[in-house]
Length: 170
Image (cartoon, rainbow, N blue to C red; front, top):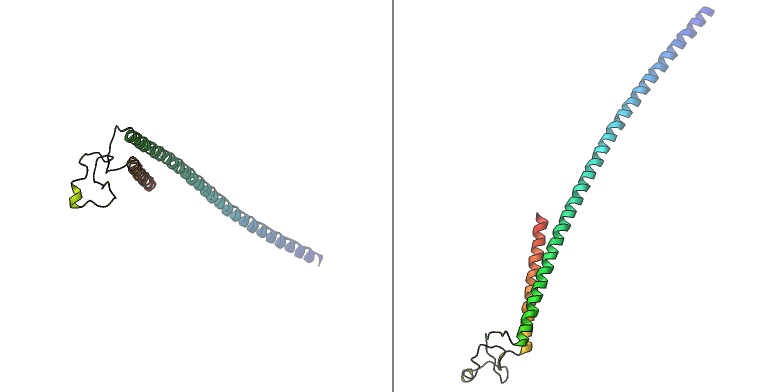
């Protein structure tokens, strides 16, 4: 009977060993599968990080290029504004010194500012100097030149804004 007991114990030990071996093999297979999944996820994460870094570099390059474009546009805008201001100041100085005069495009009644009638039409000035008596005063001429300068500045600003929009669309 002891032989049977020893044989039974040996058979049980063999079955237990086979079971443990199977469990270990299955466990190692699952660990290998999990490690494979982790490696795949790590590669995907590394690829995603690299793509993000490339996108950031491209965005920084685009940002730097746009900043340089905007700086160029701003420099041109400021130059045009300064040139327009210089021309306006020179024109006003020439008007005040008398070396430049505005041409007469209309006549003013020297009496009261009403529109000249047919009887008064012959009394209006016939010179081409708008700043003469019955025409524009010096302050009015200065105002008109400054107003024209402001219109030029608005046109320059519109052109600069259009240039910004064109550069943004490129």
